[in-house]
Length: 300
Image (tube, rainbow, N blue to C red; front, side, top):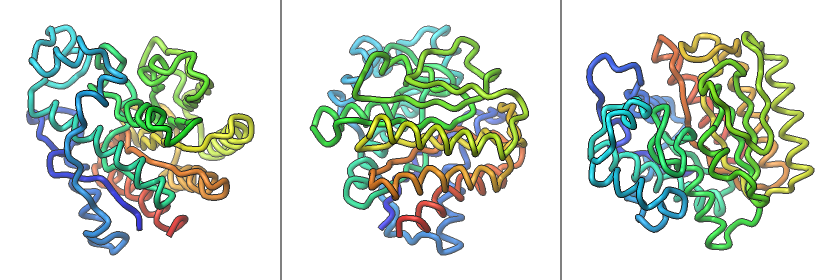
């Protein structure tokens, strides 16, 4: 059974007019349930991740500042969210959702979080709508508990996973693959294990060929025994913050390439949603929903 992390707290509201489309976290499960792709039994509500697990990735000093609401105005500006204790609890719950997804993926082959993919969070600071790096925390948990030896993080958000790259720099057991827009945020890129920056207006055929060939090469050379997949849909040509030209169908084909590779090579895979900022929320929801549809189709 496809297990999906979701909780009402994922859609913690932001001030009116804020550009981050929080409503998608409710609309995605509603759509999947309405069309019959999933049932309520597919959904589980994660609890809160423990401080110990979080501090295996984030510094004690940074996490303490978060808990005490002691971030400076400059630190809050870099995050891009008005910070609050409720927002922190939301992030801690998302982290736990991704950690539990990893455990369900070990059992069932795949599991997905209707949130997460907060790849701009560094060890000691947040950036770009990201406060805690859920995939990095979950990956470290698997390594610490000897549940995986070699982990591949596939980051296909249009923005480079700079926080994740920085956290796992020089880690031979964790391979970070980031295929992103060359001219997108962040202006200063970090060094992933393998970065593939794409020019503006990259179309479906080039994008999909790049994903397929690079993923095949990494799996063959690195031989991971677990995959985390950051499946941002801000690669769409309609995205306000992206500069690529991938169609809705192309985005779905990308998901097929990733899930088929994991299935074929018998590698458990846990996914997190990442970004999506098209003007029409219906496009964002449809693109994200495709990720769940494809996972259900391929694995079950």
